[in-house]
Image (cartoon, rainbow, N blue to C red; front, top):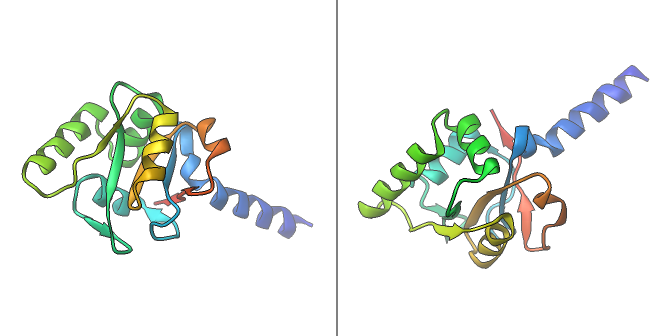
Length: 142
């Protein structure tokens, strides 16, 4: 019985890996499947990974402060969202990264990710409860 509970807790942990502390990483369903390490996610959001599954990586970022994005940047990058957005801007200027899509809300992030085949974004756990079929949750590991 204890083994079954341990397995259930492990599976639940995997299923909610991207939901860690206030954010959920999402991707377009046509982008490569599977989970990503924090290093993989950092590479996506800094232009080091330009293509994913034959598609240009396009990240969707908030136009204004967003709690889910702030939590994501703090936990994955260990810096402020403002610092990451400045880094993204530099990489776009240098031609090393596709210009990110700006979103005013979680719904806009979902819409942007759904419309970009290589799209990735961050939403609140609440918004992740009702994603369209062409947007999926990406588990984020260590």
